[in-house]
Amino acid sequence: LSFYQVMFNWLLQIPLFYWCARFASDPESKAKLSGLWRYQVAFVVLGTGAVLLWSSVSTCDKVITVFANIFGYVAALLNVLCYVPQLRRTFQHQGSGSISYVQYGLMGFGGFLSSFFQIFGSKERLTTILSSMVGNSMQCIIIIICAYFDCRNRGRTEPEAVKH
Image 1: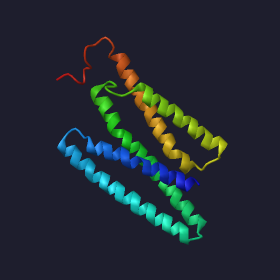
Image 2: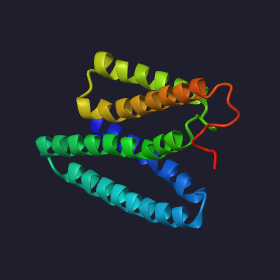
Image 3: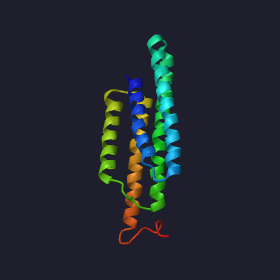
């Protein structure tokens, strides 16, 4: 079951990255993100197909477990990478900008509750939980950094990093 949970979580990222590529601010970023999105889709679709085919004709439980672990670590790495642009933008503008504290807070809290259940309720493997835990942690880090900058910049007309 955990292998399919990791695959499902991984496949959920495809629309997110597509929207990032589709609504990029400038043509250069849009072209770069579109190319990266195509590579991601090809890798996920071909990798998923290969692993599903292999798992349906094979009885090698150890091999499937190894692949599930690898995919879990890769999914966690991708979760970190998808929040890097937001972290960079937050540090550039030294404020939250259009980030919704409520959305990030609820997603992070709900994700931690889900992870708590996976750890203590269903006793999932680390690689199943790791991806969502990393994503939840990144959301919390972003909220904390944004709150710091917003509190520090309170009373100023515009953050110093944005002034030209």
